[in-house]
Image (cartoon, rainbow, N blue to C red):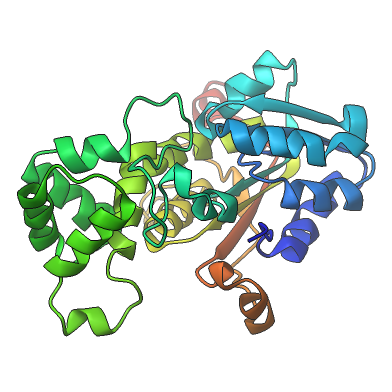
Length: 321
């Protein structure tokens, strides 16, 4: 299946005001460059920095974006290294940043990558093949309490203990379909009748653990604010509740400003809102888009605009004046 960029029209609509006069935008999770191409076409004076840790995706995007010539600069790295990538490329700031989280359709559809419970393949799940930890290490090496923690926390799986116990009992487990069968057998028959494939949440949990997806997300969000120019915009697409919770909390905190108790007559904390949230509620795909691309169904889009620092004089300086 070809990779269809999710909510591409909305991504362009939200980023375009920041890029209408040109500037750098960063697709920090480039994938197969569907969003990047749409933005390059809509903002002809802009340039792209594309980052991805998956070398296969990066090379495919390099070919797909050849027509844009020197407007495109690509870097193989983890998106959590956003600021250092820009520094390495000699770029001081950006007008737009896109984070499209999770796993892409090509990664899921390639059995050799081991992401899918539907196709036989190795227990891999590494977005970066150079990463030392693989799904095989998690499945066959983690102690039962650690497996339970991973499946419960990252998969939000209510049968995490049963699944972890079954995995430990059936070791060694070789291959994705073998793991899927073990998981399926650990879940009560009544619970298997609803909610999609019974192994979906466990595979998600192991993938998140292997790639440290939530840790990387928490690390990159402050960097997104730091690299954006005033008036610059960021768009984040998340695909499950754990991601969206982190994004929502960060957006709210960055937009909060003063944190003094409500009864204080004047602000003494000096905290300022750093961003303006552009999406009061997350934007979700339409029924038509979900019908055309079922993997878009869980997507939630949130966006913010970077605010300029105020010229407010700190309280201590005002008192000494």
